[in-house]
Length: 128
View 1 (cartoon, rainbow, N blue to C red):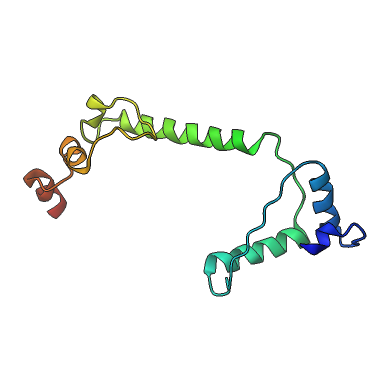
View 2: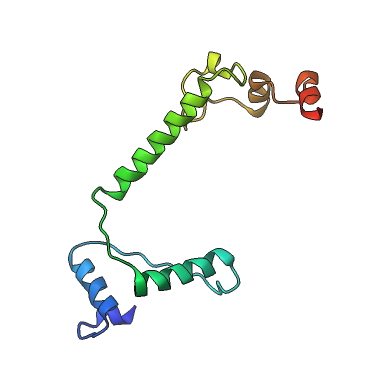
């Protein structure tokens, strides 16, 4: 981190970070204590090393926030298409649109509406 603040650094990565910083692009780094042994972190370390040594630079043509919004929208659309299908319960009769927002029901109401609870018909179907 100190290397980024020193303007005479000859390390290419430090110079790239300095250039990004001057372009008002914010870079946030997190420190994870003793990540050795965490499979996900070990994999991320390996991939990061490969990206630095073998990677081809690329630039996103759209803002990351826009891409995230598009992915969320596509996910909801796929979910809605599945909810419009012939299988499943009658929840869509009560809540016709799929959403990430809560419908305001408690657990018992959800079990009753979906039929997924301590009901003989549901228990019978899960035991077969």
